[in-house]
Image (cartoon, rainbow, N blue to C red; front, top):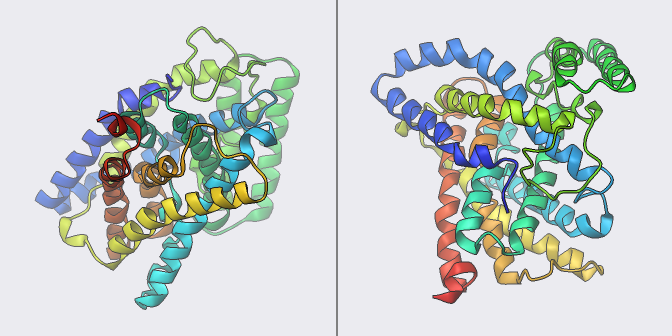
Length: 375
């Protein structure tokens, strides 16, 4: 299955490159790295990442629209249960570990291990299971729900400054009215939505004290979209509706943004590994598979149908695959903590979550699922 995030997968080397450069630079010359990272932080995290989250929101919009993969409760219910479990499990383990090891200063980071990096998880799942395994679309459905809930958590629990809710509501209402007016006039060019309604929305989030990277999320549903279900993450270069045109034009710039995101946010010293690192890593590595498997079992127990062709062993491995937090976990860490020791520790935990790929591969071998079942 070819993904709409295919370019993100094909060019994920840019993110990795930025991350590696940041790690090497921060460990070689921390002072000069911090000067550059600080200079780039606002442009990358508060402006550039607007378009990363817009692409994620675009998939949510299409998936939940009539004919989309998440529109029918019958098709989406089990994935919804699994996604909720995949977020509740890590959160519960994180909070439990924080309390058990008496680290109350880390409590604010409870949402960091909830994240699933959809691009890398998809890539790893394809390597383990093959492109046509029915576990792949299930993982994508789960990840879409995870993205949607993650955006909500980021907006509600991680304000970027002093909350000014009245100003936020008024300005956001203006942005939504402008977006609705553009749609009523059958505006098919995405630029008025971005440069008009999107800018007003960004001001609403920024001035209102919420994270401005989410500015385009409430605008995306107003962009005209194709009335067809071509499948989750199916790349259609021939599709010229507004949402797809937006994606086609912004895929490459977003890859470049992700390079700078890795460069700006991943620079932590290896000596920064501490309690926060291990708590994040343990919570995501254990919480994701436990939460996903247990909540899928609950869904089946109440009468929903287990995904066709996906065994419990497959589901266990997919749970480990979904534990790759990486990009989104890094973003949550920067939203949760100010610069300092706690941020560095939790960032390292987010980076180490990439080890879930190795754990998933080992689990696949032990359980003899996916490609390894043919060996």
